[in-house]
Image 1: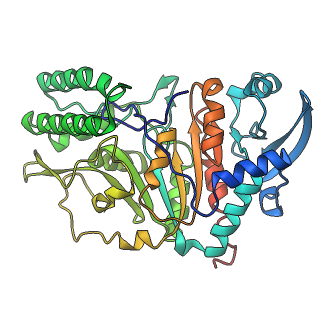
Image 2 (image 1 turned 135 degrees about the vertical axis):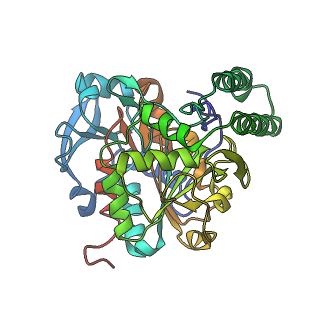
Image 3 (image 1 turned 60 degrees about the horizontal axis):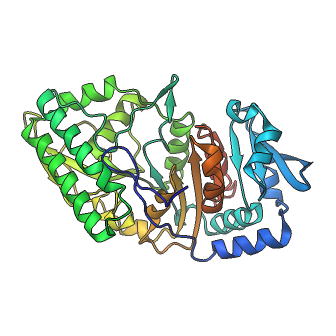
Length: 394
């Protein structure tokens, strides 16, 4: 597999370096794996999983079955062995259940303990939107992504075609291995700028956005609403990062959940509408595939009650920077860069590997602390989050 990728206006992803935890580093993780082969879980993790051990190809692998009732065929793998061996062992069960891979359970346990000790006031959640909060497959079809405005139909075929033409021109440049990063960044800014200009020129309306979302094939992972409610109860902020359009994300949340969450903030491109509901401008700096990270925090804003609402007082994002523990959720290696610019102490990274598992698993398990496979539900993350503070609320 190539370099990490980041989301583009096409709903695709670009190559981007990742960042590891500051205090509990990947270097420490590698040493532990090499020394111990596999690590024992603490009582804290054992309360999360029921464990049995098996031998396969002279490698000891721990198979753990999550105690959650959400997915009865769930499996957790702790192993540094080859994917082919695990694939043979699990057989057809690989695509039927909710499989999760943890390369270093001891490192994960250390991180859980550190975050638990610091308490919920020090925790924040950073999440990608497409194929992370939303499902990769919906009723056997690839779910709609909102990334480059691919979901959006502005009610003007001429301008929809112009935006598609931009995609065919810039998308190859986005993935070109010969274009320097500085030049590529300028090209992405140019692409997003032209796309936004076409949306304004083509007369995009609030009604067109509502209809585009209603007609889309998009669904949240089961358990996302429960996760949001659990974090809202503890007043833990959720920052949703997207190189797409904040207004579309908000409309998806409204149509799917029929409620708002006071702890959810969106870091994305935000539209400005006039009184008749027509798009007239974009607010603030442009967020594209190469700057979708904590450096864009000034763009974070709480959810609006309805599409087209004018922003109220500017949201104070300084409090986010005091939350030095991070739970990061993403579906691509490049999503690890969403925490760049944040001086965090401990980060637990959760990756959703939805497709091309055999070729990608080794890269994902080496990059993320936890990897969920095959478009898994969010129930495992809900269970994990519930371990990040003590039962008495301290």
